[in-house]
Length: 140
Image (tube, rainbow, N blue to C red; front, side):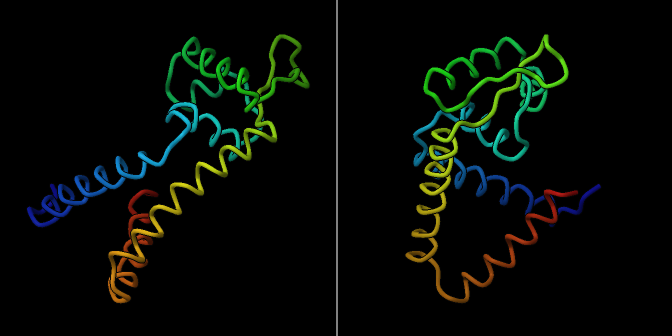
């Protein structure tokens, strides 16, 4: 059972991270679900629609709709599966990669500007250390 101090820190951290996440999302131009699919394809390479659905923990029918929307926007392409003729793979198109990079740039750009405008040098150093700690907690 966590100590009351750890529980209090956890509650404050969860609240602050939620607020920051919501604020950064204001910079988004691609809907969250579609950006998640693009990001997964960027990290993992070509995948089947059912593998994408499993990765995103959504129903295959929902993922099929998301894939259709992304294909209509030319952000992903479909090609035959190399070993299973019944399946196809979807992957990022050049336009999809560019859109994803622009999306990431907007998010990081806003956050970098906020860090420069709001934090002292000492606070920036502390934030850098905190980022490493958050990564460690996320890996647990």
